[in-house]
Image (cartoon, rainbow, N blue to C red):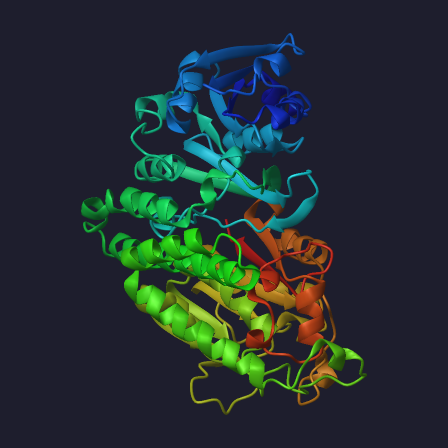
Length: 520
């Protein structure tokens, strides 16, 4: 495999605009790849901070300077200059992880009909310290439908393109001020396959001058790009539903971001005028979403004020709730379970089996579900269609289900390999298992306490599933951090905690671990 990867030619284009202070770090990250690129091309889009002085330190880098024309034009310049079979793009303030090119080339080797492949990434701060790892969002079998729901890739540097396909599609649209990468994903995935890997491939630097900090501009750009697909999306019911979901998601995402920034400005009394202006601009583009979220935030703030929990109250040995926080609101782990399922919603289709009830099947699958089945260990639930034990599973039919939704249940089965074998057996070829398991959690004080056997790490879940599904068919992600784990252990509900901190995901202290496993 290594020799085959080395035989593949790769160009890496680094675009820079007044980011010379980060440029050497970006170049070094490319030069330190386990599979070396054939060429490194620097495109200076009219910078005033003299990036050429940095480039002079390297004799294996090709430097191109042009008048400022925008990021899309700079990338097109690099694409035109490139000569390799594959091409990647890196912004000068970001970094590639050492295995980025090798991982993506291996994906192309296994998926030769793909136009692009991608992976996961980490957020880093201005100094380069890691903040958190962003779990992979897979585009699924129908990548075009996946991208209609949103930019599942998130960071462009994780992408490797087949250069001739990108060029044939016209490259990047120079008329777009932002989201030119999302526009390309939509155009390419409409007629080509896309593959991905959960491997972390790049570092995205968060700093004061990030272009993507302007919420009104980013919302306008995202909706402009998505609306270009409206006519095509209407030709397919699944695409049409994905399109509607995408419009709603983009409006909700940037509305939430803007209201959070407005709240910060109100508390700090800094940049208040500009944040008010941005909030007005976002509310004009998404009036319904703004009204709903403002009402939700006021309610949440009121609930926090009514809450008896304060930081000083944590000096105690008993949790505030003995029921995981259900009696106070939504439990913290449910936030992460639902985030994961929302990212995999397009996989919840056809005949779907869920454990316990079918609430998540219908919430996230909706009209895509043709048959909803429910498995329980014991009879009695009105929606139950199968009664069996996953470790045994004798009464469960083989190769029957298109999707299995298994949330916060596997840890109750002592014989984990046997349960996974059952899950694999009852899935249809091409079917998908969506699974979440606890890592940090209280033990149930009720009926499940006697069979609460396991806490499962990301490495353990990957190993457990790969023995049956194969390592390349598994995507493992993790959600939560020490902050959310502490709140969850104390039984605090979601609304009692800081939403921004709940969104931080620490691989070394997750609350839950999730995986999507495909039966190939």
